Amino acid sequence: MSRRPLEIVYCDDEALAIRCHADYRVLTPSSNMLASGADGAFAEGEPWTLRSASVDFEAQGVKPGMIVVLDQGGAAGARHIKGSGDHLAVASVEGSALGLRRIGLEAGVGQPPAPPEGLEGVRFSIATLAPQIEQASDDINRRFGIDPARASRAPEWIYDRRELEEATMLAVLLRQYSVDARASEGDFPLKVREVRRSLDECLARLRVRWGPSGDAAPPSTKFGTRLVRG
Image 1 (cartoon, one colour):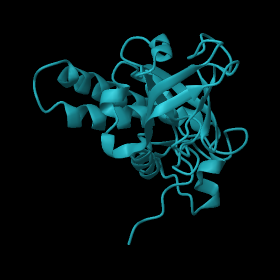
Image 2: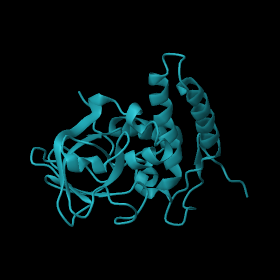
Image 3: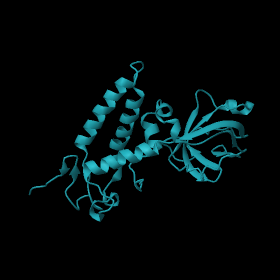
Image 4: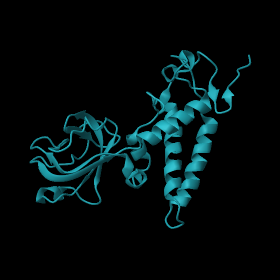
């Protein structure tokens, strides 16, 4: 029997892309591919909206906060996209159209991925680390006594869920770097050690506070509920 996935997780693909931009594409397994194609197009005057005639992004599970990689396609106009690919965050999804924005920035801020006159023949791919994020979030819940089935310990009752974002990101990165660090070549073995140290430090200082003002109950730590003596 498959278990029911968590409704609330503590980070998304965009947060991971901010943290490890250079490695994001390598760390995301091809088995987690949601959408890909070579018919991406930007209409004239819509440099932030990617459309596809062959892919229904919404139906295939693409959501805001995911990362789309754009690559130069066969059409001459697609030479606007340079290097090894442009990474952008998904801002909105409507059928076969994606609203895009620069990672970590508000919509419309920064250089658009397409020129004003439009662009055709763009290759695109959207792979996600959502399964790994959900698994890491579940582990955080168990470590800190967070229980979606208990109102007083549910994620909705956490004072600031963003405090759990760093720990979740580091847990995901540790697992992904470890999987890809089988060989000694490259810097992934070093990154495994660095991320493990950062995760240990993050978990040691993390305090999960409860309620709308953060003081509805003693904070929870990785050692259990912290007792406050007065």
